[in-house]
Image 1: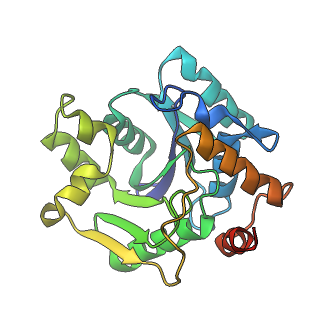
Image 2: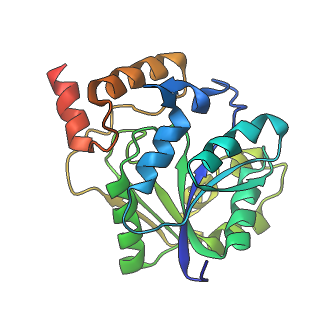
Length: 229
């Protein structure tokens, strides 16, 4: 991988405190993680797709899902997620990384395209688009050098910043070039499509069932379905 590459890192683990094992839950006959990997892979800007998980034995199954789908895996600290990102980005030669969490099965690949396009156009340390429903536009791009800077300014005891990778940047915008760009269309950010609870999973199953076997439907199709139902 070249030094100017943008990597797409899918953050996944089985040990969620709120809803353990959610990324491996069944969604239309496969796992939530399968959906995230598939939809992220539809982007046109980066083929550098990597699942980043922990080194714990219980997360071997995460690696197995990724390997089955032909996706690279990087394994690091379970709790120090920031260090896991920094280590992965440096080991794989990424100058910037796109962060996607594995509990967003309907992440929109066009948002990945747009975020990388905006990064190419505006540069910056951090780029994301606002205005999308939660779990659909959950795509953040950060320059690796900015991640390294955050790592140097925090310690493993700063659990909030080490677990929630982008929080330090967004809370210290004066120290970084932060670009939060309104999306070009009204996409109703109040709607929720990420999975944090069993109720969220039940809702995701309703959405998936409405479109299955297709998995490449777009955000407007989801919103039209919500309006009609």
